[in-house]
Image (tube, rainbow, N blue to C red; front, side, top):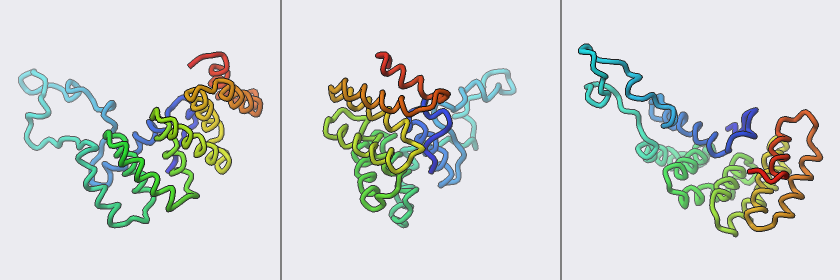
Length: 206
């Protein structure tokens, strides 16, 4: 499961995975769908024979796009039937989070991390899910997980260090945040476009 794109510096990891979750879950049950924000407006369906806009809900035979909530039972059954499928379990965890069941999402992610500690996707997703809360203990746990990811998966080190600095800042350690950002910035080549994110942080930007 690929978690990063070339412009990852401008995207939240969870948003990227959420979009992937929508596509994959829909495929599991035979639908083709996008994220809710990408659904076309009603006017995109054109007009009826009398010149009035079509009402997609009034047309018989027109399929209604499923919601993540409606797809959860099917995904839960698949995971129960094949608990060794880490990708399906990660998808279930992310889906829980997306529908507002964060506790279930975290419980699932912790179980995956325990069962497959070398799976960097699980480590990153657990870290970013914890980071999205305000619990100091969870933020500290996220910091350690991001450090683990940065050391074992060089491809994600730049974003992991950026987030670690944000965690330090949220925990009230502004000096610690600046040190993380400064140290990482010093390691990055002059042409790396992600330098701008670090420079913004060090300049006091958001």
